[in-house]
Length: 136
Image 1 (tube, rainbow, N blue to C red):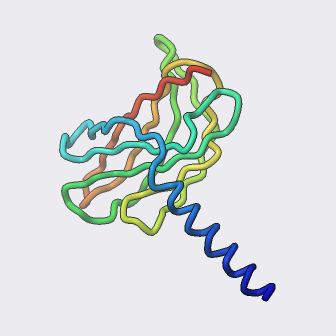
Image 2 (image 1 turned 180 degrees about the horizontal axis):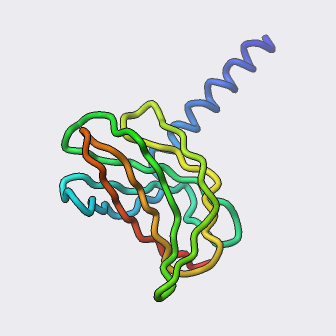
């Protein structure tokens, strides 16, 4: 009986996790600086703040409909002629094509940040800049 209850709890927990991550808070779509048909958005469970690490999913939508490669995500804040970066984030490719889980994203101060996503799509280097306003 204990195994039955434990199995039910594990299955329920797994299905709840998947359901919770279907929704979330999505940014608008922003498109590549070289190809307006290649776009991306971010999905957060909780909007990021300057007081704790954030996690989010990057979803890249590509007209080539193939898996992108060489994916990098950088956090950057432009400060009128000079900038402020953040420590490197952890990036994990998810099973769903062109979805990437980002961890340890530190937006260390309030203001407008850029999430800069660079990658290769069908042999072409792409760059997408997604602005985020960190209010807290």
